[in-house]
Image (cartoon, rainbow, N blue to C red):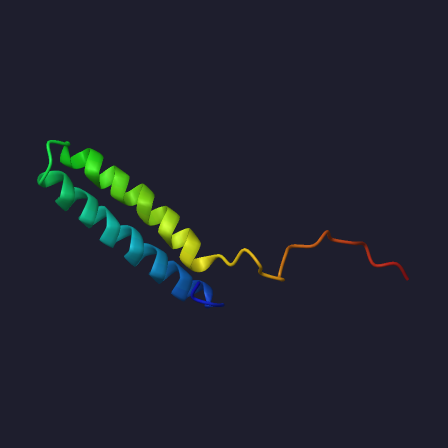
Length: 72
C-alpha cells in the first residue's frame, strides 16, 4: 500500500502501473506463441489489479457512511 495519496497522484500511479504492465505483457507475448494483443490485454488486466492493490487499503477507516438528515 502506498498510503493516502492525493487523487491526482493516485491517478498517475494507476496509469503508470497499467502502462508498464501492458508493455510487459505485450513484450512477453512476443517471446511466446501468444498473440501480442492477448499479452497486452492480460498485462493491462494484471496492471489494473496491481494498481488496485497498491492504492486501496482494505483496513481503511474512512468508509463511506450513510447520509443522515440533520434534525433541528
